[in-house]
Length: 249
Image (cartoon, rainbow, N blue to C red; front, side, top):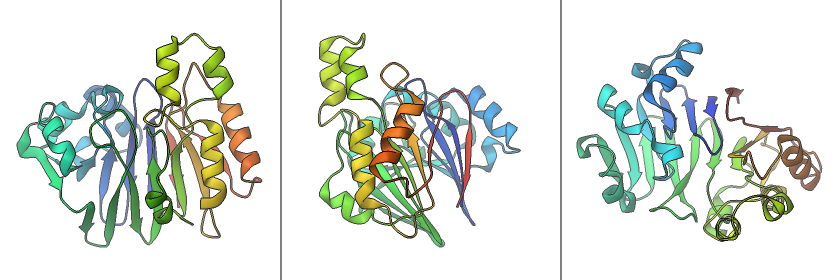
């Protein structure tokens, strides 16, 4: 499995997953021209994409979604409870509501992991095809139900949004600070590290920290905090807003 994170942060999020049989995007948080430009740097085109997954309906994850689906006529898989909201963005003909939270395509299995964010039916993903990937951003906490399904996977791409002290001492208005630290906000570096401490196992090859706040976090701080909490058992890397990250597992 190969993963190309096109960019991750407050200004836009999109990730390409390449398995033996499929190529698909998670979120389309960049304009269609920018998405095409980044893919072309990796000798790919939008026509190579087989389908699209969506974590939630916020603009930094959907800005290019309508244009991409219309241009390519590729399907977007969403949780059934997200369908009504996404019809406001994407033409219904291109949307497939997933009724039981599982997608099976050849040897590829994708399971929706319902998250906690101030959006309509947000999700993360467990993706399996020989190797396993957890993809989870934009959540205020991780439920016990999800944690049971997230143990000992090969790769974790997981939110490490903010440092609590930087957030509380920073320029955000009080109401926004409260939103970020709420149960429907974002994971802090410490929360992510503590979750991973109990999740990683012998199969785990790498951890990618995603959706870092440009205002309330530092790449070095996020990596240091998470690495210390997991006792540096697994390499930790941070995805960036303005450059791609390629991972193979």
